[in-house]
Image 1 (cartoon, rainbow, N blue to C red):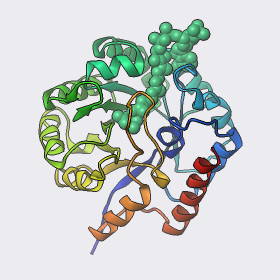
Image 2 (image 1 turned 45 degrees about the vertical axis):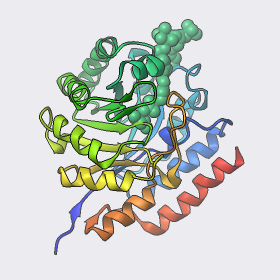
Image 3 (image 1 turned 90 degrees about the vertical axis):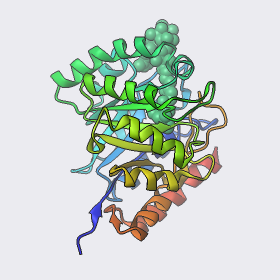
Image 4 (image 1 turned 180 degrees about the horizontal axis):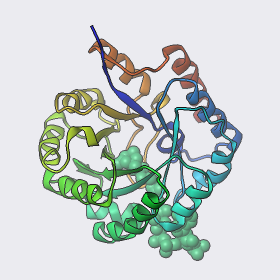
Length: 286
Ligand code: HMG
Ligand code: MG
C-alpha cells in the first residue's frame, strides 16, 4: 500500500531559538541547520530578518544564512516583516520568505507593532518583490484560536486574515496556535471557517505544545485534509511576544505519530535523534 505523504517544515533554528534567553553562537546555529539538512526535510526555516531590538537572538541572521551548507532539494526559508527584512533575505539568498500576521489585534501590536490592517499594507510590497524575484511566499497567521492578550479568537477572524494573505499571493498559509492552548474542538471550528477561504492544500498547521494537545490538534487538521505541519526538533521554541508559550510540537513526536497513522514524512529517524540531542544541548548550554 502507498503511504500518504505529510511534509514537515522544520522550525527549530527560527521559532525554536528565537526565544532562548542566552545568545547561542553563530557556529552552533549553523551546525544545527547543517545537521537538519541531512535529515530529509524539504523546507527548513533558518532565521528571521527582524529588528534585533525585538529579537536579539537572531541578530546574526545574515551570518547564519551565509554559513550554512546548502543541500540540493532543501528550501532554506526566512521570516521577513517588512521591506528591510526582504532586502536582507534577498542578499542572503533565501529560497523562500514568510510574512507573518495575526488573527488578534493585540498580538499584532505586541509582535510587530502595528494593526492587522497596517501589517497587510506593509506586506504588500514584500509580496510584490517576492513575486518579481520568483521567491515563494509563505504566510503565517498567529493566534488562530487563542491570543495571550485577548483569549479565545473567533474563527471568522482567522479566516479573514487567511483570505488577505492568500490575496497577497502566499502559496501556503500556516495557522499558528501561538500559545499552544488550542483545544481540538476550537481547532476544528477554526479550520471549518478557514477552509471557506482556502483549500486544505494551501494550509499548514503550526501547533505549539503548551497544553500537550498538539498531536490531537494535528489529527484534527489531518481529518480536515491538511498535509503540512510545522514542528521543531527537540520541541524547542516559543515566541517572546507570547508570554508562557512553549515550543513547537516536537518533530520526532510528530513523525512517530504520523507513522503510526500510516503517513510517511521522508525524515530519517536516526538523524533526527542525533539532531534532537544536539538541539537540546544548545539549550542547556545557554
Ligand atoms: P518598529 O519599531 O515599529 O519598526 O518594529 P520601525 O520600522 O519603526 O523600525 C525601528 C527600528 O527597527 C529601526 O532601527 C529599523 O531600521 C529597524 P533604528 O533606526 O531604531 O536603529 N528595523 C529592522 N532591523 C532589521 N530588520 C528588519 C527591520 N525592520 C525595522 N526587518 C518590526 C516593527 C516589525 C520591525 C518589529 O516589531 C519586529 O522586528 N518584530 C518581529 C517580532 C518577531 O520576530 N516575533 C517572532 C516571530 S513571529 C512568531 O514567532 C509566530 C510564528 O511562529 C507563528 C505562531 O507561532 O503563531 C511565526
Ligand atoms: Mg510559532
